[in-house]
Length: 332
Image 1 (cartoon, rainbow, N blue to C red):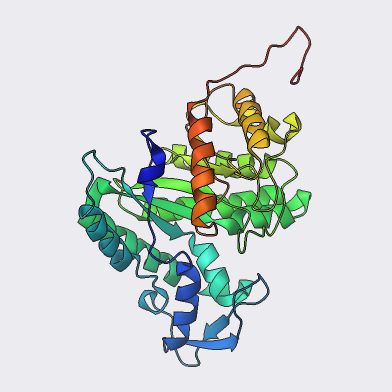
Image 2 (image 1 turned 45 degrees about the horizontal axis):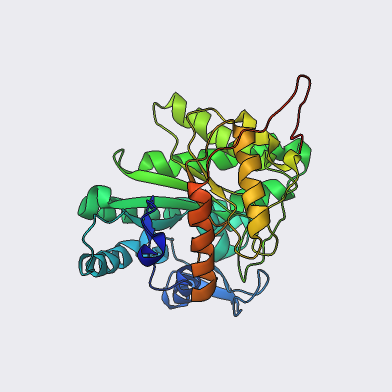
């Protein structure tokens, strides 16, 4: 990523030695005495991965479900310090799943999920506290929550406000339970296992509603909303070119930093158009440009192509659409 940036500033430098680190954790759970496997799977699809239940007579503790991200972050930081790099490095980006996501991956059942959610949250909080204590501002934490947009995409419209409030509450809880000085990014996603989304969004309304709900809660607590990565395409489709898809972005408060997840190397023209549409809906430039999901599912060649497109989009000027009186859309 440093070689591909070509002088364009990076917000953070993501680095995981294992692109399938969550899947690896899921299989390791079979070795922890507090959990019993109830379903096998090879994790090639959303319906084919292991599930667990709490073992009879056991009480689930944080160490039973820990991702041990502090150990991984320490190894990564050691490698960073060995780089032959004359310029200061961007902060290390440490991925932290939303506790709801992690518990759902483990159990696959809402009842067990809610009964033991506290153990998952505390395991993540412990990792964040240890990493922050060791590395301070050299580490930025990214909350990753595919479950949130998947739940909103599947929820009946009448239940969407209640679902949004529930999901926002759990995102905020993780942020406020960790050191106040810790820096965050909120990464929304529609799922990307084998580049297959669980839901394909009709527009950005659910994502914007969730971001607004998180923003309101944090504002009431005197906290700022972290920059938010909003996915604007999926692993199987390029970003839409219909202005209506992006219209909800106009509802975001101006103090929200938007990372536009719309760079798709297989659809460069649509990506350029999508950036124009997103920025015009916002009425301002986005804070940063990125892929809809990470590079863990991409080959090195695809990653290089994506980085090249992202560089181009990041340096493109904001182009406000020319409108005439009474116009409410993109006249082109």
